[in-house]
Length: 293
Image (tube, rainbow, N blue to C red; front, side):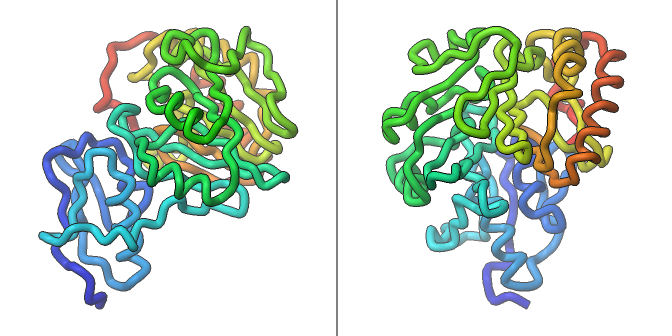
């Protein structure tokens, strides 16, 4: 048994965003529309999972008893593999969305969506390598984009459909055709969740999907958050139909919802199946509680 704090708890500010359960799925569950601690950590590895969840939580709702979290236990940026890091420190201004750092062959990085902003965090991210671009997947995740871009001396990207959320962007994506924005990195417009939603696909391995689709642990499949589609679920279905056959990736890395790594053929099959299901979707009232995490 670990000697670390044993009275972890989640306070009532939790918004049920699922981030904590992604990082500590065997230790944190859901009850009454919020995250709850399921059991004590058994070893140091599980203690690290709880610290990761606590440092990612956008409402700072996860506590190690009465003790303050030790900054030395902050694991972020957290490597998902040799190319992608999870930023952690999710922001309340992006509804707690995940953000990522993508390494390029030159050693530089691209930031996809943004964590909460501080100079200290920017230093941590930049320590991995110079950040050349901040890529926004859509308007809901635009907070802090300009501040991070200016801090890094980077270019800020957004699609014209959501340009009012970042009117001072340095690069504006237009239309619905995929475009290569850097060697091996393609922006794939996918209007639906918002008018300006974009996928960023790197090296035919990584798909940063924003809020367009995500991996659901409940259904064990790729899903659309049809109950939280601000622009048009019919347009999202049309976007998938136009795009699905050209998408190739093995890592699904969303803003909201879980991540997943599968062989490319399996991902392609599941995207085709999602496209078929999306054709049957119809507009419905916004309901965050209906999302199948």
